[in-house]
Length: 197
Image (tube, rainbow, N blue to C red; front, side, top):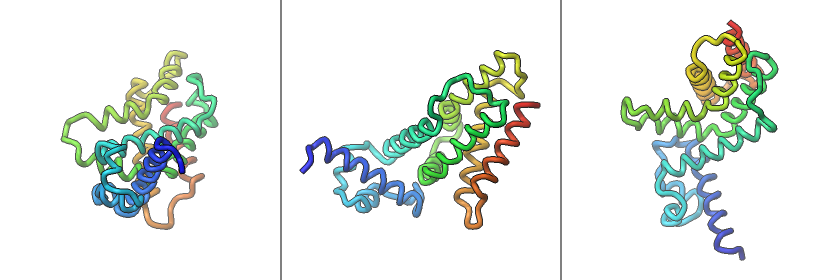
C-alpha cells in the first residue's frame, strides 16, 4: 500500500486521464465533474482535493501540454533562427505533435474560450503566454536586422494562432486527415515565406 502522497498523486493522474478521455469523446462543455470522477473510479469529493473546479483541471492539463512542448525542443536556446527552414520546421513539428498528443486538451481549451466574456482579453493574454518562445526568436531576428512583417509580439501571436487553429481544424476533422508531414510542410512553407518576405 502506498503512502498518502502517492495515492494523492495517483488520484490526480487518474482524474486528468479521465478528463482527457471524456473531453475527446464528449467535449469540455458536456463533461461534468461527476462524469470525470466516475470515469476515474474516484469519489466526487476527491476531485476537490486536487482541483477547485473544471477550469483549474484544464489549467493543469495545459501545464502538462506545455511540458510536452518543452520536451519536444530539447536544449532549446533563444538563438534559433526561424528564417532558416530546418529550424522553423523543427518548431512547427514540435507544435503539431504536441497538439496531436494533447488534442482533448485543445478541444477543451477552444470550447472553454467560448464561455469567456466578450472583450475580456483572456484569449489574447493566453496567446501571448503560449507564444513567448516564438516572440523571443523573432526579437532576436529583428535585433540582427532581419525585417519582419510586424512587431515580434504581433507576428508571434499570428503564427501561434494560425498553428493552433489549423491543428484544431484538421486534427478534429473526420477521416481522411492530413498526414503529419503534409501539415508540417505546408505550415513551414507558409510561415517561412512570411518571415523571409
